[in-house]
Image (tube, rainbow, N blue to C red):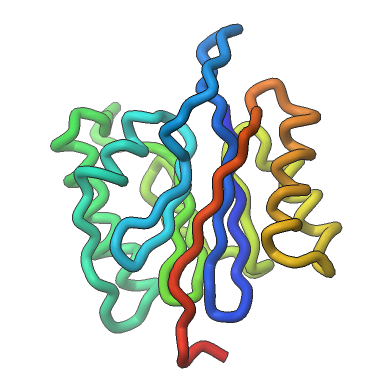
Length: 182
């Protein structure tokens, strides 16, 4: 289920997502959004609404310090792991922990946290996760001239049109603008 898209532009990270809750052949359009702000972070999740609820309501994100990629890979992910474990969401198989996949925007940068807790930062300054990710990525690639909100809308509409696990309405959020980011 899901298409969550993220774009970095002018010192802000913009996220958009669909509203589908899918289980087998059943579709529920959810009012609880897959994108939200938690402190200075913008987040958008796939995998499970339970994981998203924990990230939104139970997670107290640490303030970013020092080298941002290092911080995200260590301090941030360690805090996420503890939150998901405490909330009963994290799993462990053959001594390897796993959670779920989500996008994180902070300090004008976009990160992908994968289910094995690896953290990636896309060179393209845009990303997508969920079952509609490939379709959304193609639309994001092809629409660089559009304003951010329209670009996200086109990407989500393309994913909705071509993936049975993606459905509107769409929700959007953004990080605060950085005054020092070029």
